[in-house]
Picture 1 (cartoon, rainbow, N blue to C red):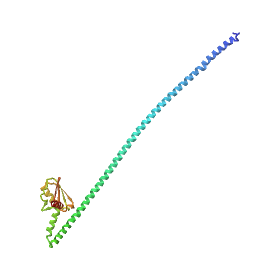
Picture 2 (cartoon, rainbow, N blue to C red):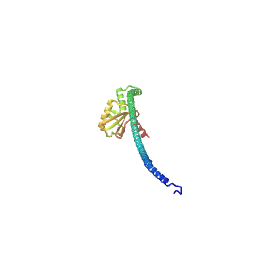
Picture 3 (cartoon, rainbow, N blue to C red):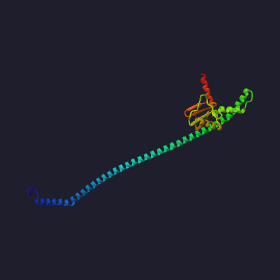
Picture 4 (cartoon, rainbow, N blue to C red):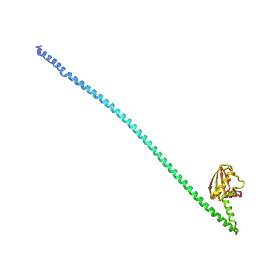
Length: 245
């Protein structure tokens, strides 16, 4: 070994020193380093686990948030729908009340107009009777019995003579409980009572409604059920025109 330039004792000493250094490093540095590496590995693993749990928690929070948002959206839609429904119902109620009030006002105005028309026609009936009497006196150049003439004119307008309804020739009253009587001018209470009594006796009518239509000129038009008996002046004139043609 000396011939090769190697000092054996020195080599052995170096080897021993190297082994001692390895043992010292293993005891002093390697194990702590391994412990540090293990701790670091554990910290990294824990950090990764914490990150995974945080990500999972965030995902759960996102799902909860989306669920709550969907529930809030549905609740808002329900509230809006209920509000719209209540608004529509309120608007329909207001519109119905307005229409009902308008219809009531129309009916009231119609009734008032009809009452006013009947009042005017009733006043006109007296004037027409007086004019007819004056005209008759003028034609025959002498004074007639005014009471008799007035009675004839009243019978002309009321269609009632001696307490009985004057019907056209070949006419008869059908049987029925409800009757509608139309006259050219408003009838007096006495005339209406006479007509009710005659209809009850001759047709069995218990409910009688009276109407006014100046276009029939005179006499009466009586409707019982679906049957109509036209004894008006206008109806008789129309029948005469047809017979002439």
